[in-house]
Amino acid sequence: MAFESQAARRDAWLRQRNNKRNYVKLPLFFSKLAGSDLAARLLGTDSANWLAGWLGDKGERQAARYLRRQGFKILARRFRTELGELDLVARDGACTVFVEVKTRRSDLAGQPHEAVDRAKQAQLTRLALAFLKRFRLLEQPARFDIVSILWDGAQEPQIRHYRNAFEPPGRGQLFS
Image (cartoon, rainbow, N blue to C red):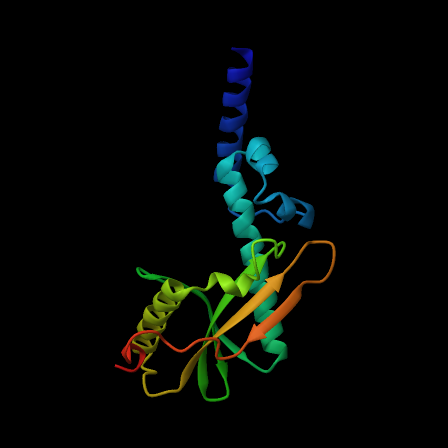
């Protein structure tokens, strides 16, 4: 019974602490714990998901920095609609580039870019179309890139940029 009350107090303290702060910068050590059972046991399952989101956010910032160095202009980051979210929208010359960023701590489950399956491509296509319509850019050329980041926390991340990673699935819905 004492254990249950101690766990309840810890959970209440974590909820109160998380409500006060929306963002906390943690050392990379904690990002290694993000998907592990240890993190879930120590910090609760919500905190483990939060840490995974933190790694993804850090990866998006790293990808934006990388693309800027390659000459891209970042137009939007985390563009959200009711359909979902675009990680990065950039400009490469006259072309609008929709960038999906995938960050992983290891390649044990495959390379990060392999997570962009046909369903995700269809969702990104719908989001890109919404973006292009909203900003009246339908006549401009557009493409989809993927930035794959492997970041184990001990060293600099390995960044791979796949230009024109996929064609929009379906029949011309991006250009309608």
